[in-house]
Image 1 (cartoon, rainbow, N blue to C red):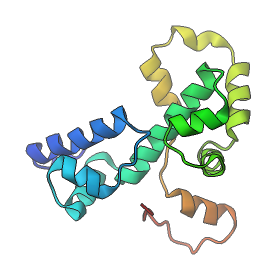
Image 2 (cartoon, rainbow, N blue to C red):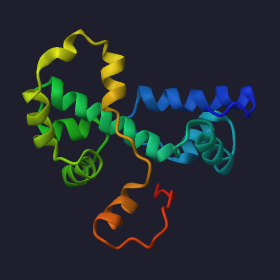
Image 3 (spheres, one colour):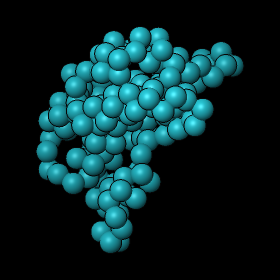
Length: 161
């Protein structure tokens, strides 16, 4: 978090962040988040990025993928059910985005995680979750363009809502 921001604004941003954490399966457009924070949409989007280092959409996407990865690892739920529970409306979009971020399909991820030794059972869950958190340093669409060889030479941080 940036320390140069107004403490009251940070509390408002944390309120929106906490709501996303508690219900990451819900739709959280900037308009809704700004309403929760009591600031304008533009001010919210800019302040959120300044405070947390990522745009609100990317933060939500990270939480959804993190939750999906945990469900894949810890449950026998079908991939479709996990996609729906974590806020995706389409199995195809979920699978493509999951692969773009983690480097493997949801089914491959499940198999890979289950093949690992269970030595992590003694590590506190918060540490394991932090270590497995996706690091979205660029937009998923930009990552796809770069991997396809169609990069324009600039690293875009723009997000599509």
